[in-house]
Image (cartoon, rainbow, N blue to C red):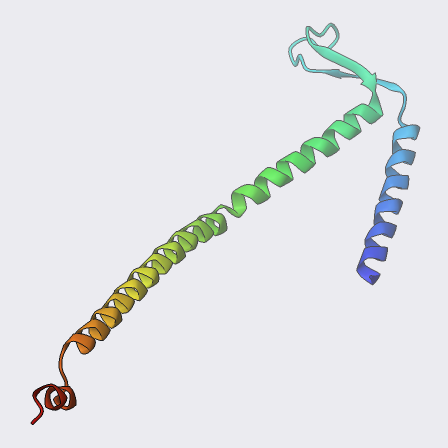
Length: 126
């Protein structure tokens, strides 16, 4: 419960900080992408500065997510391999259980059809 309250409080503080930062940076800024002619650029963008801030934050989140996803690749691969191994072992257990049950059934049938010494005495009368 405390962690949830703390995370909500931190989220609120971060939101207030970002909104304040965005409101304070509403003036237009030109970003020039032409390094050879910066005074008369062939490609440039003019937008309010907070859009550049928001874009950089979103790009950072995306790059961080990709980095985490790539970093956890070995764990996902290991989980897939262990899942396949568990499926193979389960199939082996099921096969051995069926074989055991078949052998038990066969042994019961054999025991029922094979005369025991007491039965042989009862049948022959000796």
